Amino acid sequence: MSEALAARPAPPLPHSRRMLVLGICCMSLLIVSLDNTALNVALPSMQRELDASVSGMQWTIDAYTLVLASLLMLAGSTADRIGRRKVFTAGLVMFTLGSLLCSLAPNLESLVAFRAVQAVGGSMLNPVAMSIITNTFTEPRERARAIGVWGGVVGISMAAGPLIGGLLVDSVGWRSIFWVNLPVGLAALLLTLRFVPESRAPKARRADPVGQLLVIGLLASLTYAIIEAPEAGWTSPLTLTLAGVSVLSLIGLIVYEPRRPEPLIDVRFFRSAPFSGATVIAVCAFASLAGFLFLNTLYLQNVRGLSALHAGLYMLPMAAMTFVCAPLSGRLVAARGPRLSLVVAGVAMAVSAVLFAGFEAERSDPLMFTGYVLFGLGFGMVNAPITNTAVSGMPRAQAGVAAAVASTSRQIGSTLGVAVIGAVLAAGVSGTSYAAGFVTASVPAWWIIAGCGLAVLVVGLLTSGNWAQRTARQTADRLEEEAAPAKTSAHA
Image 1: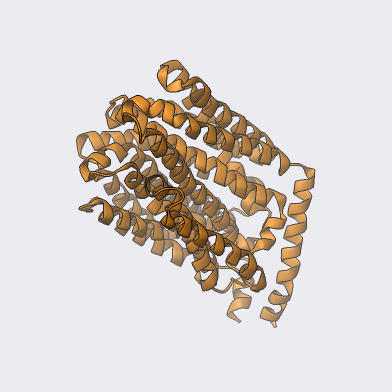
Image 2: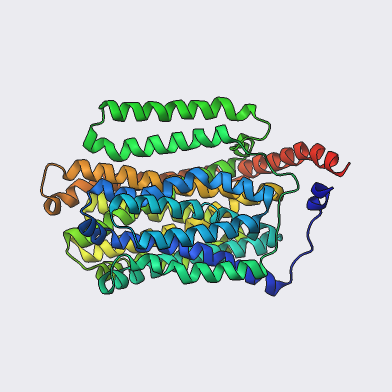
């Protein structure tokens, strides 16, 4: 009886209430995104105070993104099953608590552990918030505009993060970056309890503990191997063992998941070319962003000797372009589909990276700022088509899982971006003076970022045409047909 009641569509909320729900969901995205962008500016200060290596700085970022990527799909399916507002509320509590603990961390090891606590909360926020938005804004054009606003919040965080982070680091210290999350998290929690309606899927998927462990094994072993390999050696027993664990975990997922009636990773989603394309594009785009921020933060402060605030001001052109282009991309996707946004994003991100890789843009301020503007333009255009494509072709009942796959792809990209770019940089500067060799050592890393931009362009073109749209419709129809018997039995 309860499943039959859950299957009934809830009456639409008034427009003002829908906008309030969107605002509350955007608050959760703001604190998560602001925390990450501000933390990048604080890396050199944290490195000095905690006496950390390059790999230590990588772990302050990847401890968060790794845990987040591992738990996002679990959080999405759990929210579909027990209630999206319940999980969203728990995420706000956990993220705020983790932020408080990070601000009190006495050493690098504690900070990395508390960042993992933050990530447990963060895994319950973004995909669940996107699922709430998808179920609140049911009309496609209105939903695309709402997702454009959602993407604009990423731009706000990129614009405000380096400035707020730099100001706080220079005036109070890096610990104050985590204090910003406390009042915003508390306000979002109170507003959620008061205004966000509860919702769940008519037939939610059961837990998949084996699949969850395989995902954690794959991502954790791969990330650890990449980060520690420059110091331990690429052919060391540790690196080879971790690589073997990641390969076995991947094989386990490929063999085990399709045999489950309700798997953690539903491979049926990937029959849709736009959904598969959005997953690949998310990995490439966010790997580019993570690598871009990591390289520039270390260069501006450790090589040029700028303060955290001045480094934030230097990167403002990139952040400002993201802020302007994200809502514009949302409107373009609503009016013309995702292709134009993806083409612009891929070209701009690739050209930006080529300026650094082929022309050493760091050595010329005009060229460097041109690279910043182009990268901000590209990244601002890419987020809305990723999100809209990932959720629009799926049944609303599986919105949490679909949104979680898209969010997981973003975090996997961020994790791998920092791990790979950091490893390439560490290998390049190990045998020379850090400041003198930084620009030359970073050239291979910039070529990797350029390749990611090119992948966004090519995959975007291949998965946004008529053929791709047909696969999306066919996939949605099959999922609806396969879900129909379950709905019939629930009503019975």
